[in-house]
Length: 434
Image (cartoon, rainbow, N blue to C red):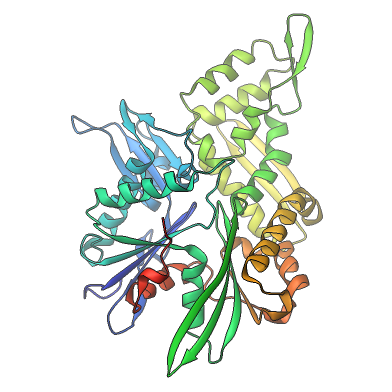
């Protein structure tokens, strides 16, 4: 844990997979909040929630790694939710019912932040410090509503007593953190790869009279990132084992099984809400007419037995391993279901090729918005776990030159930069203008 002296500024990098909090003090010292769990100290607080039935006050809720513990114990009826940030900008998502109580997105986010405050202890008090919150340049989703997402963020933090917070593009936080190491003027491209979005900013940094000055030149983002790459593995390895490509009989016709079930399987946020849904009831009905119903029964078992999180972990382990190995063995099992397959890196790179092309087009977009050519960029600062994927590294090396690529801590830089922005002379100049 950080020292007990109060923080003047708090930076929060609320991520799709993990959330990181940094504390800055007036002396300029900044440190990442760490959580002691399972005999180890962690800077990442898993962006998960686990609800269990409560009394008159409603469901009991746990967050972060403690939510995962409660879910894996599974001794009582539970609702486990992950990747819920992906719903922030979705007008289609209005609320969900959990043990007879309705929760909007802002209710889920506020509940999550309350668990984070609880496990941080007295060192974290969001109502008493300046709070700077990261937000993606472009929210995830097919038709994201930016204004809706920001309204939901503000309501959630308001529930915790935060009267005024700055909302800053996530790559700007990473840029501010990175710029502390610069000893000369530089034009820098910051590429932040999260779970749900990939965001890019071009910054011009200069030192005048010993002070760092920064000018944001342009921003661009896209709702493609780590979870999308996970989805490609699910689509090619897991979904066929659970019936994708199969058929069912409708009167005298044989038709392919509806694809939307497998789109849900590939999206961690939606899979978390499938249990008890109409979609699951439709899938159960479909087993009566499927030519081969056993894979569908396995799909239903996966949902009903809450195997989405173990599946997520197995997919993530395979994806990370592919960054270091040419081939990996994918293995997943639970409740009588077993899926094993070998994944070769060339195949994985084919699966994500269209995603990489869209990421590359977004990089071109941010350069065009900034009025900067690739040759004029002196440094490319990569952050986020997906930046380790060799095909992502190759994309930036080909455009800018491998010698320009640099990275710091892949997971803490955004939160630390956000906390430092809160200490800057004019934090408003960095904030997103609603």
